[in-house]
Amino acid sequence: VSDMLERLYRRFDALADRFDVHPLETIGDAYIAVTNNFDDQAHNHASAMARFAIEAVKSARTVLVDEDDPSKGTVTIRVGLASGPVAATIVGIRHPKYTLLGDTMNTASRMESSSKPMHIQCTELTSKLIEAQDPDVLMRARGAVEIKGKGQMETFWIVGTRNHESSNNSLLGTPHWSSQSSVHNHSAQARADAKPDAGL
Image (cartoon, rainbow, N blue to C red; front, side):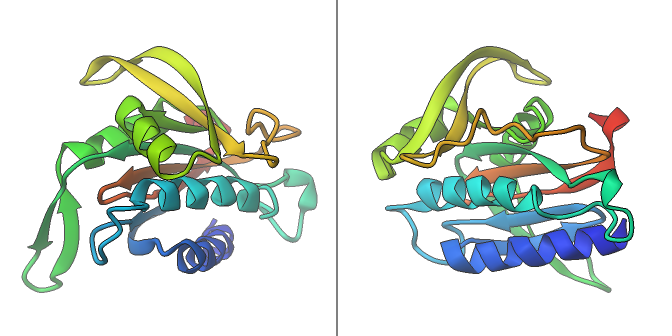
């Protein structure tokens, strides 16, 4: 698993550089990144994270679960996006760590957990920000979804970019492992957790 995550995270890091997304931290098998927190990205923070997420899904399709046994297939990810304010803080004394807290972070996590493999789910607010910042990012309404701790929320699928729409963001074949991603904008978060399919 550690080798798979290393290969996956290297690809995410390269995409983060490409889209000006800041990797915040890894927590176990979780990869977290943000936008509009370290730099002023008010004009494109949602667009940057949406495009990062789209390419992360595409990239995951090329990462083998086990390079010595290709029959195990490739990694799959679930992605969730939410937008809003966050609180930045330093936690810990012996090993102090910069982190972000707040409802936006929790909502992005919920968007991920209620998403589907190889799909990118976002909140209604995030969809409006993306539409305003980047009309070439394509979205479809998912409708009302019951979100743990929040009740019914209107959510949207991000399905690709104009002229490059992925087929419902679905992975061909049956994955052996899954990876999860959550993404926030306004401080946006990207997270990937690897676990067996049974954990979906």
